[in-house]
Image (cartoon, rainbow, N blue to C red; front, side):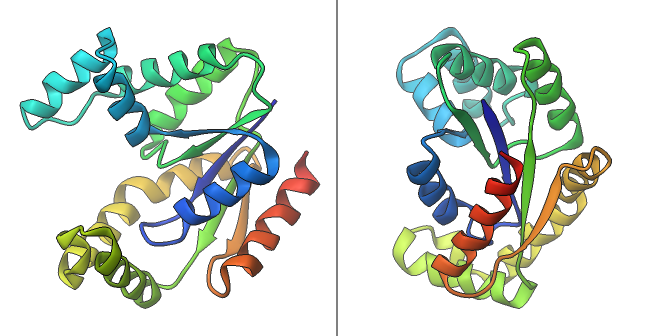
Length: 191
């Protein structure tokens, strides 16, 4: 089993590249947003718990999210691997994920960090607003704040995994297919 975190700021192309990587390598895609929606839709215990937090305007606690990831791992015992997209977002989440994977006798094998300059990120997100219907994507000031939150809260996750030699830096600018080939080269060297 090969477990990968696709890492980068909002707008770096994680969603686009995740789809291509999953198709090529046959991994299970673990997006915490998708997991939350599925658990709430099927009204599992964790889904009801998450829904209560969301309805009260609170963030879903890490323990609930880790529980959902554990459920997804258990539901796919024969998976070739998992691609984590949008998780972990904090060092505490990374540590919790590592403990969970250790219990399952596996680990994160690689963190592929997509690098894109801030002006390009904001340009991409504003462009995405035209097709996504998300009005908040169109506001450059909101995008700058999101990038700041990413730098302060999420970027330390890369530093955490760097200590274990798991981070590979990949240029996230250019043609989608060129970036995909760079990611595949890194993955093929690790597997």
